[in-house]
Image 1 (spheres, rainbow, N blue to C red):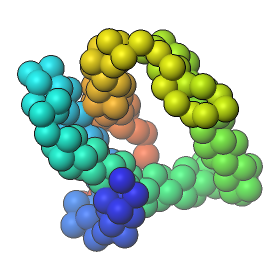
Image 2: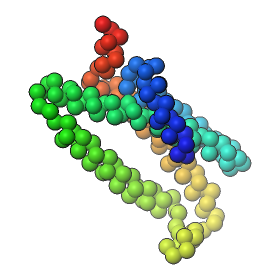
Image 3: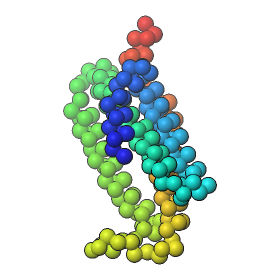
Image 4: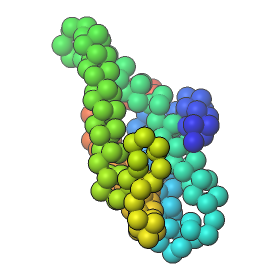
Length: 182
């Protein structure tokens, strides 16, 4: 799963140059994630993923590719925010903005780790803390896998669409767009 994400992070600057806008790249990445998530969920619901695990692995790779594509545009948006703040207020607050970004990243990681634990508990995944073996009812595995696909496929798709709407409200015009207009 790391390989597609790393590859897309490396090619992200080229995609940014081609599309010319941070928001366009982020929306492109979100559409990739949306498509992979919806297809994953649909294939699970019709029973294809139960027959062939390869489809799941490929679709999760596509989803990871979309996530990795966001790396460079997100950092570029932070820099734009720092520059915009300097232009508007006349104060250099790059350190504060960078620290806040780091804090938000750590908070996001902590909350997502907690949420994963809660979700696994909710869907019935129980393990023996000493052996690491599944201790739940074996008959509960198929519905548990359906819920897992909701979490691994459908929720990322929903969040991707939400992100597209949020990025539509991004108040700063990309420098590259301004240069194209001039």
